[in-house]
Image 1 (cartoon, rainbow, N blue to C red):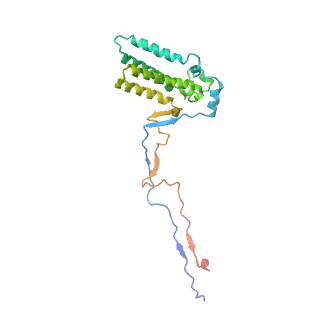
Image 2: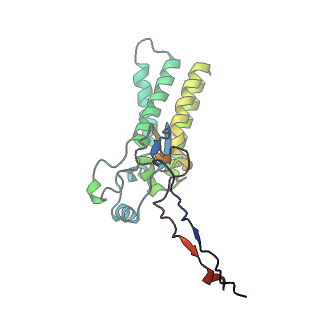
Image 3: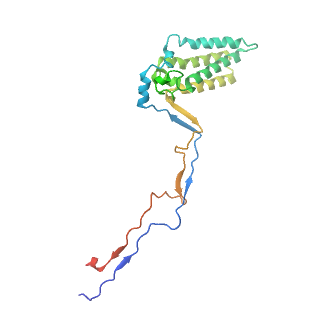
Length: 234
């Protein structure tokens, strides 16, 4: 029976997701890394430029007499150093070993690019060392095995003729490891950067709220008000 009384309308206030106060943000800076390993990638265009002409900067290692030149240079250096007055065999062999390792590292693993004919390859070798250019970057080739074994053989000779002096052995071994590591396949096209520039990398600042919560993605509008009348219950 209708008593003539209708239920009153119920008005729910709109829900607002706004927070009081200003949603100020601050920058949380990440500490940059001291060391960073980067991989030197090669695009398809660079691969085509490398294959366009023969790389005369690296092909000489496979020519006749290229292997023997290392033995000749080591023997010549030994004769020159022995000619210094009051030179001992311990110092002489250590100096020969360190000089060869330093020149080998500088030539094969430090200098990048090619000194001549770079316009023929469109700069495709600008970021590659001589070791990475030899045999088109292939690993464990005869030339690379020879270039790997020469420093080891010279180290063994210098260790023997220095009468296994522990201090000289430690110096020669450290230099040998420093020179052989870049020759390993795992180090191919890898660069160790000291104090790299992280201005555009992952070490940049990340925006966060003062409260430490995640940064809002955008402005959220409040939902519309809801009105409930007696007609909705009939």
